[in-house]
Length: 310
Image (cartoon, rainbow, N blue to C red):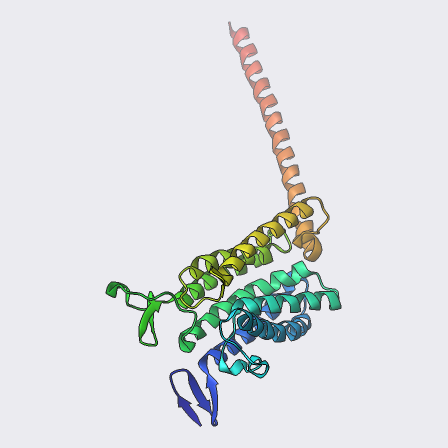
């Protein structure tokens, strides 16, 4: 029934690679998490499941096409579809999934900022888990390590008998940290700007990937330029631009804040607290003035008593 090997295991005679299995788990957890987080942007579980029907297939197609285009391997038309033989790129998956998300928002009339905010933590979690699969697939590793003192995991990993920097591990850790940050921000009731999480995902992931890609030893190239490193820099710039536009438009009132759109009771409560605080301050000020007047009268009375005694 079961048999375990270096890169795959047998399930009733069917070979299942650890990489593919881990990617499938990552996708399932990402969708499940999005269903839990949906309420923070006024979405429902059904919305997330339907969105996944657009996003997941296109992310797989995008991951494959990206790899085929930038790989130095020549593929026949039939070989392009043999994804089980390996050859997929995360950035292609992100691009394909983004296209799927945009199509979902257009067809079903959903706000792309809200969908993007819910998708961001799930996406980065999926990427963090997916990178663990790279260990079993023996891919996405760094340049060769020649210093014997650096030949230890997780700093480096032995790939095909040669030690390389564990760039897949670095990226996994980076993504997990980004996931924690995005989740904390998503659940912050004071976070005002819709689309902020989506923008921060682009900035944080882009920054980490740009640095880590510089250490990669199996990158895809356009001439002498690492494709993913160039794309990472563009993502950082895109994230900054989107975040700036969202900030300005929200301040102008052209984009409703998270509280105004989905948590009006939060706004009402904040306004109530502000009014109560204002009234309390006014009351304290009046009491202070009354105390000063009484103190003044008391001192004046004492002075008059002293004069009478004299």
